[in-house]
Length: 464
Image 1 (tube, one colour):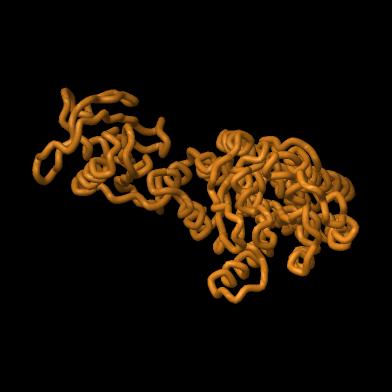
Image 2 (cartoon, one colour):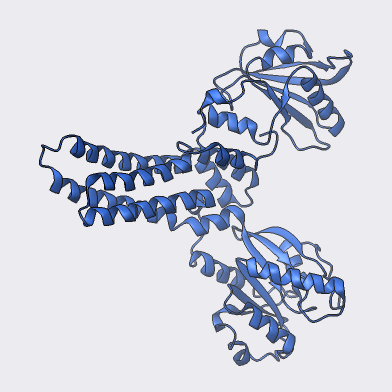
């Protein structure tokens, strides 16, 4: 675990709003002395250092080198420990133009602050004990949330729901370790049989808690990161029209000319509460065009990595060799086959199609008439959520880091049960339990090395 003393106690700064034109831009400062530093730039009725905590002051920011007024501003002063980082924080609210916001930031840097690293404000909140790692990661999940369910899940995690569950499990493990240590330290007391029996009961209960939490992990990953969905098919069967239908806009070019889409087109959509990262790919066919051929290879690569493949077929035409090659390629993959143009007379043989995949994965649709999509949504929910509605509970363990650590903890508990049931010495049981305790501690950051923590915070934007 990284200690607070190891962290530099200097003043950091960054722009905390998106770069570009807007109503306001915010330059944030954090660290001991940041209020005094801001006073060297701020011109108002009173010095910022004379203002109470959590107040806003009107004034101007001046260039420390030239004395030139850069902008008219409102400056917020928030004093430790009741701040995001548990350090003194100053936020300069200036006009939101790209140039003016950068000029204010440069003035702060010229006055002696250091440019913050990615996620450094949240990292300080973690190192100062305001957040654990699960809550810190929830901040970025909240920023990137694409559906109401994923937003609510991030809020729940930010409020400490996962931390609470994990620390309850760690307390159970530590109680068992303490009981074993008592047996080891006081061998004259005849409690061995009772200890083995109670340890087995507690270990089974704890493993079941872990399994319950893990049962939501795959669903949580989808809600957190989006269902990686690829639209495939031969050229001119309606793939780009399907993407445009999902997006409710003309995002992809649609023509009657085969091979119009030569590269992938990626967009996020909200499919009835399920976030989907949907990729429209180049039509898969044999071609002599080198650019189109590169697009076809890219389409196949995306399909191999996808959570879900939507294969488009033209239901008004019989299967041809190109269709059959694609069906053979996706066989065994998580796929739904969409028979487009169901509004026309159907020439495609369902019997022939079921040689490649079950009938339940074949859905007639008409992009032109917007029919068949309720069945598509239901089929996606059935494949990934067993037909149930997605809930914020599903997002509790959507982070792959959390899932892997909890899997290691469960495996340690399984080894512990074997050790108990074979009546091995108590110190062997204690070793298994300590492995479970360490794995659980990695989730919250109570047990974590500097490399893991640095990797987590590099995923943040500069101003958070």
